[in-house]
Length: 390
Image (cartoon, rainbow, N blue to C red; front, side):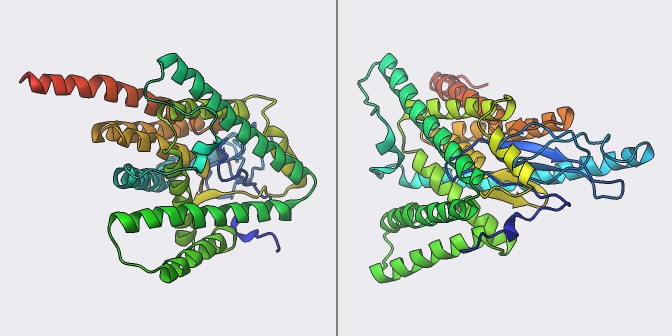
């Protein structure tokens, strides 16, 4: 099988890279400047994995999302000034193109959690956890157990990243593509089939096994085809959102304390992988730059914006967990995550360097969750019971 490359073709003389596994995060944001005075206006990219900003004036649109000086890389004087307004317009358009798919993914997970939350699911990621949370466990026991589970989850991400780097270093690009294609195909067939089966049971839809198997097979095969080969953008984008929704819904089945520990740990990992000089993804990125080749991976592309699926997944996990409490908590977490994404883009424009996409959004989302679920909502209920209205 030849490595599909059409979906990862860059827009400049150099090519970017798209990295990461289905469950891997380490995603970041970056911005590129035009290669010359006559080039198109600079734009925002969001992708994975991380790297430090390139010093060169010629930038690429890569999955590592190299950040670049905006005005200094273009023509001096009036040329740079005239580009500032288009850049501002592009920024708002690109933020909008990110908000829509992220919102669609989060709302889809919220809907699935609301419909299927009462249905028990065995296996999945829960089978990988060493600690099984029990209701009568003490707080200290739950906290320690959640840390153990989070450590295993992060170790899995580090292991996948290391294996990806070794394979890429050994020029095993076709093997990496085969690995990713198999992973996506199995995810669409297994998790997609599970969700479809549970929805059929929930809504009492009459469907025979032959028809359901035929539909599921075509759903998975078409998904692999459009994700890894050239295809209509809207179909590819839809499948990428579906992949993130299926993964996120599965992760919402993890125990409560374990979920929060994993979200916090992944955010810290994102900081380490992106901002530290010896981040484990740095070698992978530098190797891809040296060879001027793309790193196979999954990334959502809309116009000139790229967002790795890891962000979709963990944003959706947070709002899915909020749905298990009340709608008010869902709304506050939803707004907090989108605000964090916008703030990250603003910091990107100010500092013009590669930034991790998770920490701000996850931190704001977690803060809003606990404040709303355990402070605001109980207070509003108590005031309502007492007949006090504000």
